[in-house]
Image (cartoon, rainbow, N blue to C red):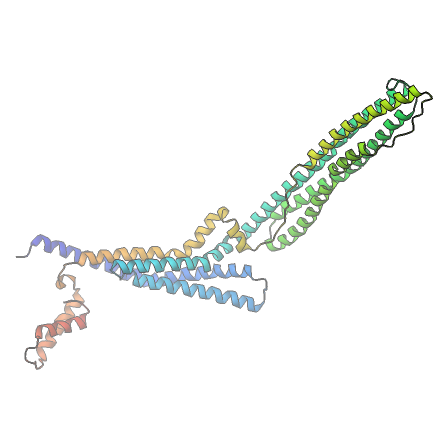
Length: 431
Protein backbone atom coordinates (compact mmCIF):
# COMPACT_ATOMS: atom_id res chain seq x y z
CA UNK A 1 0.00 0.00 0.00
CA UNK A 2 1.55 3.35 -0.97
CA UNK A 3 2.62 5.71 1.83
CA UNK A 4 0.63 9.01 1.62
CA UNK A 5 3.43 10.95 3.31
CA UNK A 6 6.04 9.73 0.83
CA UNK A 7 3.76 10.41 -2.12
CA UNK A 8 3.13 13.95 -0.87
CA UNK A 9 6.89 14.61 -0.47
CA UNK A 10 7.56 13.32 -3.97
CA UNK A 11 4.84 15.52 -5.35
CA UNK A 12 6.28 18.60 -3.64
CA UNK A 13 9.77 17.68 -4.88
CA UNK A 14 8.50 17.37 -8.43
CA UNK A 15 6.76 20.73 -8.13
CA UNK A 16 9.95 22.41 -6.82
CA UNK A 17 11.93 20.82 -9.62
CA UNK A 18 9.51 22.24 -12.18
CA UNK A 19 9.86 25.67 -10.56
CA UNK A 20 13.65 25.48 -10.83
CA UNK A 21 13.41 24.37 -14.43
CA UNK A 22 11.19 27.33 -15.16
CA UNK A 23 13.75 29.69 -13.64
CA UNK A 24 16.54 28.08 -15.65
CA UNK A 25 14.51 28.36 -18.85
CA UNK A 26 13.96 32.06 -18.18
CA UNK A 27 17.63 32.67 -17.33
CA UNK A 28 18.77 30.91 -20.47
CA UNK A 29 16.88 33.46 -22.58
CA UNK A 30 19.58 36.07 -21.87
CA UNK A 31 22.54 34.03 -20.57
CA UNK A 32 24.04 33.72 -24.04
CA UNK A 33 23.70 37.46 -24.61
CA UNK A 34 25.30 38.23 -21.26
CA UNK A 35 28.17 35.87 -21.97
CA UNK A 36 28.64 37.50 -25.36
CA UNK A 37 28.79 40.96 -23.76
CA UNK A 38 31.46 39.79 -21.31
CA UNK A 39 33.47 38.21 -24.14
CA UNK A 40 33.25 41.36 -26.27
CA UNK A 41 34.24 43.59 -23.34
CA UNK A 42 37.25 41.40 -22.66
CA UNK A 43 38.13 41.53 -26.36
CA UNK A 44 38.04 45.33 -26.37
CA UNK A 45 40.44 45.60 -23.45
CA UNK A 46 42.59 42.90 -25.01
CA UNK A 47 42.75 45.02 -28.18
CA UNK A 48 43.94 48.01 -26.17
CA UNK A 49 46.55 45.89 -24.43
CA UNK A 50 47.85 44.38 -27.67
CA UNK A 51 47.99 47.82 -29.30
CA UNK A 52 50.30 49.04 -26.53
CA UNK A 53 52.73 46.21 -27.31
CA UNK A 54 52.98 46.87 -31.05
CA UNK A 55 55.57 49.44 -32.09
CA UNK A 56 54.10 49.97 -35.55
CA UNK A 57 50.87 51.95 -35.78
CA UNK A 58 50.03 51.06 -39.38
CA UNK A 59 47.02 49.28 -40.79
CA UNK A 60 48.59 45.83 -40.50
CA UNK A 61 49.27 46.29 -36.79
CA UNK A 62 45.73 47.49 -36.24
CA UNK A 63 44.37 44.50 -38.12
CA UNK A 64 46.61 42.12 -36.14
CA UNK A 65 45.46 43.56 -32.81
CA UNK A 66 41.83 43.41 -33.94
CA UNK A 67 42.18 39.81 -35.11
CA UNK A 68 43.74 38.78 -31.82
CA UNK A 69 41.03 40.47 -29.77
CA UNK A 70 38.27 38.86 -31.87
CA UNK A 71 39.91 35.46 -31.44
CA UNK A 72 40.02 36.02 -27.68
CA UNK A 73 36.35 37.00 -27.56
CA UNK A 74 35.30 33.97 -29.61
CA UNK A 75 37.46 31.66 -27.55
CA UNK A 76 36.04 32.91 -24.25
CA UNK A 77 32.46 32.69 -25.52
CA UNK A 78 32.85 29.16 -26.90
CA UNK A 79 34.76 27.89 -23.87
CA UNK A 80 32.20 29.05 -21.32
CA UNK A 81 29.29 28.04 -23.56
CA UNK A 82 30.61 24.48 -23.56
CA UNK A 83 30.91 24.44 -19.80
CA UNK A 84 27.54 26.09 -19.18
CA UNK A 85 25.89 23.32 -21.18
CA UNK A 86 27.95 20.26 -20.33
CA UNK A 87 29.08 20.66 -16.73
CA UNK A 88 25.57 20.82 -15.18
CA UNK A 89 24.47 17.86 -17.30
CA UNK A 90 27.09 15.34 -16.17
CA UNK A 91 26.28 13.26 -13.10
CA UNK A 92 29.30 11.07 -12.35
CA UNK A 93 32.13 12.23 -10.11
CA UNK A 94 34.74 11.23 -12.69
CA UNK A 95 33.12 13.36 -15.37
CA UNK A 96 32.84 16.34 -13.03
CA UNK A 97 36.49 16.09 -12.01
CA UNK A 98 37.49 15.90 -15.66
CA UNK A 99 35.46 18.97 -16.58
CA UNK A 100 36.79 20.82 -13.54
CA UNK A 101 40.31 20.09 -14.73
CA UNK A 102 39.39 21.33 -18.19
CA UNK A 103 37.85 24.47 -16.69
CA UNK A 104 41.01 25.12 -14.64
CA UNK A 105 43.26 24.64 -17.66
CA UNK A 106 41.05 26.86 -19.79
CA UNK A 107 41.01 29.56 -17.09
CA UNK A 108 44.81 29.58 -17.02
CA UNK A 109 44.86 29.89 -20.80
CA UNK A 110 42.38 32.79 -20.67
CA UNK A 111 44.50 34.61 -18.08
CA UNK A 112 47.60 34.05 -20.22
CA UNK A 113 46.07 35.26 -23.47
CA UNK A 114 43.68 37.92 -22.23
CA UNK A 115 43.65 38.91 -18.57
CA UNK A 116 47.17 40.33 -18.40
CA UNK A 117 46.47 42.39 -21.51
CA UNK A 118 43.23 43.60 -19.93
CA UNK A 119 45.23 44.64 -16.86
CA UNK A 120 47.69 46.45 -19.14
CA UNK A 121 44.79 48.37 -20.71
CA UNK A 122 43.32 49.22 -17.29
CA UNK A 123 46.50 50.20 -15.45
CA UNK A 124 49.30 50.22 -18.04
CA UNK A 125 49.97 53.96 -17.93
CA UNK A 126 49.91 54.03 -14.15
CA UNK A 127 52.32 51.08 -14.04
CA UNK A 128 54.76 52.83 -16.38
CA UNK A 129 54.55 55.94 -14.20
CA UNK A 130 55.28 53.72 -11.21
CA UNK A 131 58.36 52.45 -13.03
CA UNK A 132 59.50 56.01 -13.68
CA UNK A 133 58.99 56.94 -10.03
CA UNK A 134 60.96 53.90 -8.84
CA UNK A 135 63.77 54.78 -11.24
CA UNK A 136 63.87 58.37 -9.95
CA UNK A 137 64.29 57.07 -6.40
CA UNK A 138 67.14 54.81 -7.50
CA UNK A 139 68.88 57.67 -9.27
CA UNK A 140 68.42 59.94 -6.26
CA UNK A 141 70.04 57.37 -3.96
CA UNK A 142 72.92 56.93 -6.39
CA UNK A 143 73.44 60.69 -6.73
CA UNK A 144 73.34 61.27 -2.98
CA UNK A 145 75.76 58.40 -2.35
CA UNK A 146 78.20 59.69 -4.98
CA UNK A 147 77.98 63.17 -3.44
CA UNK A 148 78.55 61.77 0.04
CA UNK A 149 81.69 59.93 -1.07
CA UNK A 150 82.94 63.02 -2.89
CA UNK A 151 82.44 65.14 0.24
CA UNK A 152 84.27 62.53 2.31
CA UNK A 153 87.18 62.88 -0.09
CA UNK A 154 87.04 66.66 0.16
CA UNK A 155 87.17 66.33 3.95
CA UNK A 156 90.67 64.86 3.57
CA UNK A 157 91.81 68.42 2.91
CA UNK A 158 91.60 69.00 6.67
CA UNK A 159 93.97 66.08 7.31
CA UNK A 160 96.34 67.37 4.66
CA UNK A 161 96.20 70.88 6.14
CA UNK A 162 96.94 69.53 9.61
CA UNK A 163 100.05 67.65 8.41
CA UNK A 164 101.17 70.65 6.37
CA UNK A 165 100.75 72.95 9.34
CA UNK A 166 102.77 70.62 11.55
CA UNK A 167 105.72 70.73 9.12
CA UNK A 168 105.45 74.51 8.85
CA UNK A 169 105.54 74.78 12.64
CA UNK A 170 108.60 72.52 12.76
CA UNK A 171 110.30 74.65 10.12
CA UNK A 172 109.63 77.77 12.15
CA UNK A 173 111.16 76.08 15.19
CA UNK A 174 114.19 75.16 13.11
CA UNK A 175 114.51 78.75 11.92
CA UNK A 176 114.67 79.98 15.52
CA UNK A 177 117.08 77.20 16.56
CA UNK A 178 114.63 75.33 18.78
CA UNK A 179 114.76 72.08 16.77
CA UNK A 180 118.32 71.12 15.83
CA UNK A 181 119.91 73.83 17.93
CA UNK A 182 121.19 75.67 14.90
CA UNK A 183 119.22 78.81 14.11
CA UNK A 184 118.64 79.69 10.46
CA UNK A 185 117.32 78.14 7.31
CA UNK A 186 119.70 75.31 6.80
CA UNK A 187 119.28 71.70 5.65
CA UNK A 188 116.61 70.73 8.19
CA UNK A 189 114.57 73.85 7.41
CA UNK A 190 114.69 73.10 3.68
CA UNK A 191 113.48 69.49 4.19
CA UNK A 192 110.55 70.67 6.27
CA UNK A 193 109.64 73.40 3.82
CA UNK A 194 109.93 70.95 0.92
CA UNK A 195 107.26 68.66 2.42
CA UNK A 196 104.99 71.48 3.53
CA UNK A 197 105.08 72.85 -0.04
CA UNK A 198 104.10 69.44 -1.42
CA UNK A 199 101.20 69.24 1.02
CA UNK A 200 100.13 72.80 0.18
CA UNK A 201 99.99 71.87 -3.51
CA UNK A 202 97.90 68.80 -2.66
CA UNK A 203 95.58 70.94 -0.57
CA UNK A 204 95.14 73.34 -3.47
CA UNK A 205 94.24 70.44 -5.79
CA UNK A 206 91.58 69.26 -3.35
CA UNK A 207 90.18 72.77 -3.06
CA UNK A 208 89.88 73.00 -6.85
CA UNK A 209 87.61 69.96 -6.85
CA UNK A 210 85.11 71.41 -4.39
CA UNK A 211 83.30 73.76 -6.85
CA UNK A 212 83.11 70.94 -9.41
CA UNK A 213 81.48 68.62 -6.89
CA UNK A 214 78.98 71.27 -5.81
CA UNK A 215 78.11 72.15 -9.41
CA UNK A 216 77.61 68.52 -10.42
CA UNK A 217 75.40 67.85 -7.40
CA UNK A 218 73.25 70.94 -8.06
CA UNK A 219 72.85 70.04 -11.72
CA UNK A 220 71.96 66.47 -10.76
CA UNK A 221 69.23 67.69 -8.42
CA UNK A 222 67.85 69.88 -11.22
CA UNK A 223 67.65 66.88 -13.53
CA UNK A 224 66.03 64.81 -10.77
CA UNK A 225 63.41 67.50 -10.27
CA UNK A 226 62.56 67.39 -13.97
CA UNK A 227 62.38 63.60 -13.91
CA UNK A 228 59.97 63.70 -10.96
CA UNK A 229 57.71 66.12 -12.80
CA UNK A 230 57.70 63.83 -15.84
CA UNK A 231 56.25 61.00 -13.74
CA UNK A 232 53.10 62.97 -12.90
CA UNK A 233 52.61 65.27 -15.88
CA UNK A 234 49.41 64.80 -17.92
CA UNK A 235 49.59 63.40 -21.41
CA UNK A 236 50.69 60.14 -23.03
CA UNK A 237 53.24 58.33 -20.92
CA UNK A 238 55.17 57.17 -24.01
CA UNK A 239 56.21 60.73 -24.90
CA UNK A 240 57.18 61.45 -21.31
CA UNK A 241 59.23 58.26 -21.21
CA UNK A 242 61.36 59.48 -24.11
CA UNK A 243 62.25 62.72 -22.32
CA UNK A 244 62.74 60.79 -19.10
CA UNK A 245 65.24 58.52 -20.82
CA UNK A 246 67.23 61.50 -22.09
CA UNK A 247 67.33 63.02 -18.61
CA UNK A 248 68.42 59.69 -17.15
CA UNK A 249 71.39 59.55 -19.54
CA UNK A 250 72.51 63.06 -18.50
CA UNK A 251 72.11 62.23 -14.82
CA UNK A 252 74.10 59.01 -15.17
CA UNK A 253 76.91 61.05 -16.73
CA UNK A 254 76.90 63.43 -13.76
CA UNK A 255 77.01 60.57 -11.28
CA UNK A 256 79.99 59.09 -13.11
CA UNK A 257 81.67 62.50 -13.07
CA UNK A 258 81.16 62.77 -9.31
CA UNK A 259 82.74 59.35 -8.83
CA UNK A 260 85.79 60.61 -10.71
CA UNK A 261 85.96 63.80 -8.64
CA UNK A 262 86.74 61.98 -5.40
CA UNK A 263 90.28 62.86 -4.27
CA UNK A 264 90.87 59.82 -2.04
CA UNK A 265 93.12 58.04 -4.60
CA UNK A 266 95.06 61.27 -5.14
CA UNK A 267 95.65 61.77 -1.42
CA UNK A 268 96.63 58.12 -0.98
CA UNK A 269 99.30 58.36 -3.69
CA UNK A 270 100.53 61.68 -2.32
CA UNK A 271 100.86 60.19 1.16
CA UNK A 272 102.89 57.29 -0.24
CA UNK A 273 105.19 59.70 -2.06
CA UNK A 274 105.46 61.98 0.96
CA UNK A 275 107.96 59.79 2.79
CA UNK A 276 109.35 57.93 -0.18
CA UNK A 277 110.52 60.93 -2.20
CA UNK A 278 112.67 63.08 0.07
CA UNK A 279 115.47 65.14 -1.44
CA UNK A 280 118.06 65.39 1.31
CA UNK A 281 120.03 68.65 1.12
CA UNK A 282 123.72 68.93 1.88
CA UNK A 283 124.49 69.45 5.53
CA UNK A 284 125.65 73.03 5.74
CA UNK A 285 126.91 73.37 9.30
CA UNK A 286 130.49 74.65 9.62
CA UNK A 287 131.44 72.24 12.37
CA UNK A 288 131.40 68.45 12.52
CA UNK A 289 129.22 68.53 15.63
CA UNK A 290 126.72 70.80 13.92
CA UNK A 291 126.49 68.52 10.90
CA UNK A 292 125.91 65.60 13.24
CA UNK A 293 123.08 67.48 14.93
CA UNK A 294 121.56 68.26 11.53
CA UNK A 295 121.75 64.62 10.44
CA UNK A 296 120.13 63.47 13.67
CA UNK A 297 117.38 66.06 13.33
CA UNK A 298 116.74 65.11 9.70
CA UNK A 299 116.48 61.46 10.73
CA UNK A 300 113.90 62.40 13.36
CA UNK A 301 112.04 64.54 10.83
CA UNK A 302 111.94 61.62 8.39
CA UNK A 303 110.50 59.39 11.11
CA UNK A 304 107.80 61.94 11.88
CA UNK A 305 107.25 62.35 8.17
CA UNK A 306 106.69 58.60 7.76
CA UNK A 307 104.22 58.54 10.66
CA UNK A 308 102.21 61.48 9.31
CA UNK A 309 102.24 60.01 5.80
CA UNK A 310 100.96 56.66 7.13
CA UNK A 311 98.16 58.41 9.02
CA UNK A 312 97.17 60.38 5.94
CA UNK A 313 97.29 57.25 3.77
CA UNK A 314 95.00 55.35 6.16
CA UNK A 315 92.49 58.21 6.10
CA UNK A 316 92.48 58.18 2.30
CA UNK A 317 92.11 54.39 2.21
CA UNK A 318 89.08 54.59 4.51
CA UNK A 319 87.40 56.98 2.10
CA UNK A 320 88.33 54.85 -0.90
CA UNK A 321 86.89 51.76 0.84
CA UNK A 322 83.44 53.33 1.22
CA UNK A 323 80.66 51.49 -0.59
CA UNK A 324 80.35 53.13 -4.01
CA UNK A 325 77.18 54.61 -5.40
CA UNK A 326 74.98 51.90 -6.93
CA UNK A 327 74.88 51.58 -10.67
CA UNK A 328 71.47 52.64 -12.00
CA UNK A 329 70.35 52.12 -15.57
CA UNK A 330 66.94 53.19 -16.79
CA UNK A 331 65.32 50.57 -19.01
CA UNK A 332 62.13 51.63 -20.85
CA UNK A 333 59.39 49.02 -20.57
CA UNK A 334 55.96 48.58 -22.13
CA UNK A 335 52.75 49.01 -20.19
CA UNK A 336 52.12 45.25 -20.21
CA UNK A 337 55.56 44.51 -18.76
CA UNK A 338 55.13 47.29 -16.18
CA UNK A 339 51.80 45.83 -15.02
CA UNK A 340 53.47 42.47 -14.44
CA UNK A 341 56.56 43.99 -12.79
CA UNK A 342 54.50 46.10 -10.36
CA UNK A 343 51.52 43.75 -10.08
CA UNK A 344 51.42 44.09 -6.28
CA UNK A 345 50.63 47.81 -6.66
CA UNK A 346 47.69 47.22 -9.02
CA UNK A 347 45.78 44.39 -7.39
CA UNK A 348 42.32 45.95 -8.09
CA UNK A 349 43.10 46.27 -11.80
CA UNK A 350 44.34 42.70 -11.95
CA UNK A 351 41.25 41.51 -10.07
CA UNK A 352 38.94 43.32 -12.50
CA UNK A 353 40.82 42.05 -15.54
CA UNK A 354 40.63 38.45 -14.33
CA UNK A 355 37.04 38.72 -13.09
CA UNK A 356 35.67 39.84 -16.45
CA UNK A 357 37.14 36.67 -18.00
CA UNK A 358 36.42 34.14 -15.25
CA UNK A 359 33.03 35.38 -14.00
CA UNK A 360 31.18 32.74 -16.09
CA UNK A 361 32.79 30.09 -13.89
CA UNK A 362 30.42 31.21 -11.13
CA UNK A 363 27.47 30.73 -13.50
CA UNK A 364 28.71 27.22 -14.29
CA UNK A 365 28.77 26.32 -10.61
CA UNK A 366 25.32 27.86 -10.02
CA UNK A 367 23.79 25.86 -12.87
CA UNK A 368 25.54 22.71 -11.70
CA UNK A 369 24.12 23.06 -8.19
CA UNK A 370 20.65 23.83 -9.52
CA UNK A 371 20.58 20.86 -11.90
CA UNK A 372 21.81 18.64 -9.09
CA UNK A 373 18.91 19.82 -6.93
CA UNK A 374 16.45 19.13 -9.76
CA UNK A 375 17.75 15.60 -10.19
CA UNK A 376 17.63 14.91 -6.46
CA UNK A 377 14.05 16.25 -6.16
CA UNK A 378 12.86 14.07 -9.05
CA UNK A 379 14.57 10.95 -7.80
CA UNK A 380 11.93 8.25 -7.22
CA UNK A 381 8.97 10.22 -8.52
CA UNK A 382 6.47 8.68 -10.95
CA UNK A 383 6.02 9.92 -14.48
CA UNK A 384 2.61 11.38 -13.75
CA UNK A 385 4.18 13.61 -11.09
CA UNK A 386 6.71 15.05 -13.49
CA UNK A 387 4.55 15.56 -16.56
CA UNK A 388 3.37 19.02 -17.40
CA UNK A 389 -0.11 19.77 -18.76
CA UNK A 390 1.29 20.02 -22.27
CA UNK A 391 3.03 16.67 -21.93
CA UNK A 392 -0.17 15.10 -20.50
CA UNK A 393 -2.22 16.40 -23.43
CA UNK A 394 0.33 14.99 -25.87
CA UNK A 395 0.22 11.64 -24.11
CA UNK A 396 -3.59 11.56 -24.27
CA UNK A 397 -3.45 12.40 -27.97
CA UNK A 398 -1.04 9.53 -28.54
CA UNK A 399 -3.28 7.20 -26.59
CA UNK A 400 -6.25 8.16 -28.77
CA UNK A 401 -4.14 7.64 -31.85
CA UNK A 402 -3.20 4.19 -30.67
CA UNK A 403 -6.84 3.31 -30.01
CA UNK A 404 -8.05 4.65 -33.39
CA UNK A 405 -5.34 3.04 -35.56
CA UNK A 406 -4.60 -0.41 -34.22
CA UNK A 407 -1.72 -2.16 -35.91
CA UNK A 408 -1.29 -5.89 -36.41
CA UNK A 409 0.79 -7.49 -33.72
CA UNK A 410 3.26 -10.29 -33.95
CA UNK A 411 2.90 -13.27 -31.68
CA UNK A 412 4.54 -12.60 -28.35
CA UNK A 413 4.93 -8.85 -29.08
CA UNK A 414 4.77 -6.56 -26.04
CA UNK A 415 2.08 -4.00 -26.93
CA UNK A 416 2.47 -2.14 -23.68
CA UNK A 417 6.17 -1.49 -24.21
CA UNK A 418 5.60 -0.34 -27.81
CA UNK A 419 2.91 2.12 -26.71
CA UNK A 420 5.15 3.44 -23.98
CA UNK A 421 7.97 3.99 -26.46
CA UNK A 422 5.64 6.01 -28.67
CA UNK A 423 4.69 8.18 -25.76
CA UNK A 424 8.37 8.68 -24.95
CA UNK A 425 9.20 9.67 -28.54
CA UNK A 426 6.40 12.20 -28.82
CA UNK A 427 6.50 13.75 -25.37
CA UNK A 428 10.18 13.48 -24.68
CA UNK A 429 9.47 12.03 -21.19
CA UNK A 430 10.33 8.80 -19.51
CA UNK A 431 7.23 6.66 -18.95
